[in-house]
Length: 447
Image: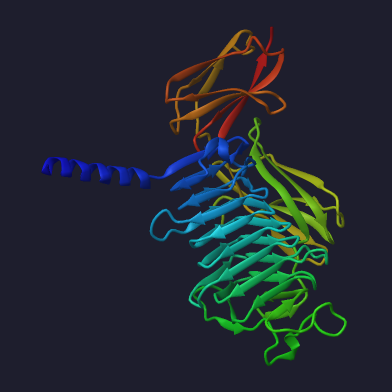
């Protein structure tokens, strides 16, 4: 009996350990959530390649998750973020998330780094835990809402120029941001902006500003209380009466306290991608869906994500409510890791930064050879060396359609693709490492 009990205990420990083990998902092609991950994903590490979109096609729960890179399109579905066990900070790094009428519920602390959450329509985001925004943005459009509740000991920390933007600058948006209890800390140039008189910020508490988290903080109020000068955009001919603790836009919380006027992003940016092409150049593509008084885009590059240099400039349309596509090619990227961001500059000289995109130019998969080329009936692809196991080789058409893909176990492996069924022309062979970085080469099929 003792032996059986010991065995059962051992099995229980093994099962518990296996349950807590992180599951890693690498998303290197546009996918629906249900096709690659369970609806309830525990201890998940989700790596999305640059320019790739993971689409939620169902309501999901992510427990103790870490998400890096790429785009997430929620549609009108819900995302419940919680801990698998104990306390866990849900982390998003380099992620561009779009919510179009769904809900984000946070039941654990949140960390956003170089990320943008855009809430459209009737989307909502609620949390009662600490939130840290580092060079990140939360954009509230339409009638979307952000609500942060909890005790005063719960901190909302915004740093490195982070922005919470309430509204799109037009009175058609009724987006609102409510802080009910937690302490809002704005470090360096970080801001909260209500962009129009139909948008409001609600907070009975004091918010704080400081150059850094280690500096002495200065306290401010966002509403009237004993200072009638803070009765901004309310009463009289305005659409709202003055009622504490509502602050109506256009108004901004920043380093100097509460001020009239909105600090708007000069453009509404969508679909910003950075891709290494087969000529080893890095192509940056982006689009705007609205521009107001915009001047130009400075393209900035860094090798450490800290020190930035302007490598090019693209003129902006100026004023537009249509989708406008832009592109810039870095013909001489640095060897190794390259960080890219856009500085969006308006005609008044104000600027705002896009999210950061990361592209690696050094080969993670090296010494790739394929033969014959031109190919007639088949092509062999050989990996003499590999920086990581589990590389994926894909045969891709010029239109971007993945025709075939095969996973490579390790070094010295050769895989064969039959190609006799494809029309004569130029195709692409792509070898992608586990983190989504890749090398691509042209393959000619000739019958």
